[in-house]
Amino acid sequence: MNLLLEAAKEQLAVDFLRQQIKSSRWQGKVYLAGGAVRDELMGLPIKDIDLVVDMPDGGIEFAKWLTRKLGIYSSSNPITYPKFGTAKLNLRGVKFKGVDLSSIDIEVVMPRTEKYTFGSRKPEVGTGTLAQDVERRDFTVNSLLKDLTTGEIKDLTGQGKRDIERGVIQTPLDPDIIFKDDPLRMLRAIRFTVKYNWKLPFFMIKGIKRNAHMLKHISAERIRDELDKMIVTGNPDKAIRLLQITTLSKYVMPELDLLIGLAQNKYHKWDANKHTLEVLKGTPPTVVTRLAALFHDIGKAETKEITDDAIHFYRHEEVGATITRDIMKRLKYPKKIIDAVVVAVGQHMRLKSSGKEGEIVSDKALRKLQADLGDHLEHTLDLMHADNTAHATEYSLEKQIPGIRKRLKNLKAATSGNVRPEIPIDGHDVMQATGVRPGPIVKTLLDVVIDQWYENPAISRQQALDLIEKTLKDMAK
Image (cartoon, rainbow, N blue to C red; front, top):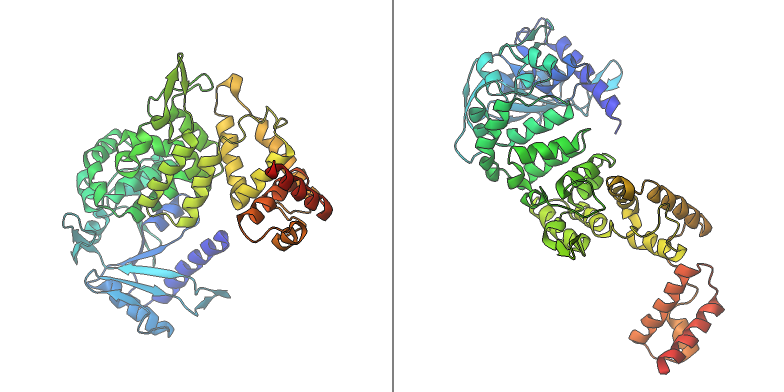
């Protein structure tokens, strides 16, 4: 879906809402809240329309009024949550200025007070004032309200606008209060800091450290989603460093902390943790590639050896792949994403000895690489390149993966885009030509032909049969 188009729809929806409440009893009572106001002040497209209606039970009553007025009221529109004073409605079938707003969802609340029970995400809710409502929000930059009638922006904490201008993330109340209400806000603080390249004051860092242990009460899925969002920003390395400084990493992926201060060999200029952060920074901003970068050397702490004063990490990629799978399963990642990341971690050393420009590795080995990695090839190559360029200067391989990619492209073109073996015979042909009976031997012989296909994709039927005959003779010796 076109994100710019959706952002434009969100703004149109706000204009539409302003028109609907004009001269109604809701005029001057409905406020745009949270991130939408922040983004508007920052000159960014708004998304996620959240409204606060300054009346007792205003969220539910306004949602019912609007959907009835528009003729879209039903048993499921709006969805109401009386216990929390909130409602969610959808502008299904509504058109404004020729644009269909059916994809727009709107959340509406009354000004609330909240009281959380330890370990629960669901607060006890009471009717509050606008001032009390903004104080319960996570950060001052998200506490601004915009009157939909007048366009006036209310900064009831007196700090929201200033913190946006200064680029500062802080809580509207004592961090201990805000973080205990919802510990996920600690991860959100880091995400906003790195997303906008803002500052996280020392008192906020201390507040997060004091409350970091509360993160263990948050579901793995919510933690995972915040991790994904922060690592695809322009500052993924800063995000991970802040997780470590605040000790939140202990409750997200403690295995990564074992790389801090882990000395490496002559091929590296940094410890394993700093190297990992540099690789992370050097990869394209996709979840799979960034996760692969984050975990690519996770096996080094377990495999470090010192022999004749030289440091080695034998099979760290294999061990790392196992650890990566365990971490991602713990964080409830979908299997498809786990598999993609694990393949990249497990294969990232595969081309290390292929030469400065990838000239040493054979065509056969590259064809096997293409077939083995399949859909995981490109993000694995992205990881390899970022890893190569984060080594010590004299061992940096900046041209290796670009050279490999060029060769892979030519090899693929030579086989009309086919990267998986297509041999000219099958099991029936093997049995007919050799007289062998069905069984493992048939597969063994076909595997020999497949191996030869990697050497010569143009292998003919007769060449394949001759190879099988020779193989059988060799096996009989």
